[in-house]
Image 1 (spheres, rainbow, N blue to C red):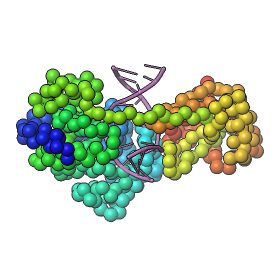
Image 2: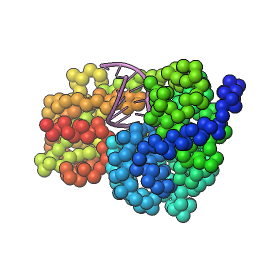
Image 3: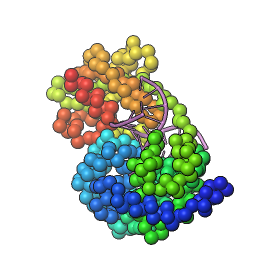
Image 4: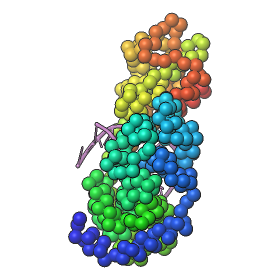
Length: 362
DNA sequence: GACTCGTGGTA
DNA sequence: TTACCAAGAGT
């Protein structure tokens, strides 16, 4: 650990810091649906959903998901199609595929009980250093640090740490600090308090230092540099991709959809058949017709451009031209699946393709 | 260590 | 509008 951090850490009254932080948390904590009990399964589900995702976004998904899959066993027994549907729109879909896989592993290897040791729980798919600490501390009251973006921001300010929190190895600095700072008596409350403080008071921009229960312990506050911390390097711009998608129907009103590959982007989700095209969209419709014929053997008649949809990912942007059209009678459609409008509702689509469907109705 | 992997909200 | 953000993990 860096000398300056070590110095600031040991000049702090850690006992008072813990006490002030936890007292504030017990008074001010939000009523969140995953705080109603300490069911390790529900804690687990909430922590996976909350990865890179806002609390307000997660709440309705968490309520619906835990109603549909109330127990670890219920989730383990569910079809992946239904599990993905319950995650539809939440993003980062590998999270729920890993969760589903890990829950099955808990059934087969741990008798359906979520393991309570760092070694065992870390072996589960989708459980990284943060989620390990979060589940162990919140569900089992084990004094393991749970270092997320909130915790790094709060502690960077408290201890005046100028390391770049965007760099993976920086997380370990905070983890080592937290092993010393975490409350051994109330690790659950301590970890949640740090995250709650980051979410409510010690926010990324314009932190509410005058409302902060631990400002007297905060080096950044005393030095007036709270707005300059934490240091976080910028990420590069997403790559632009031009695409075309076809909403194909036949004379009986069936739709023809495609299931995506089991790995990579939007894995195992459903989509309307689509391809990347040249940036010059003069011949785009022709490119799409040729793709549909080459890839699926379709004989389709497409209408003029219906509209465009933009799908913004973290690292790329799809600019999708939407075409609607008829699949001619007797045409083949190889790897496409023929479904009724009602059947289609059971499958999980990325948000962009939900929009494509909506657009095709107009 | 850099890149992949979603989405909606906000200043 | 652009840029960044939000309880990260896998490859």
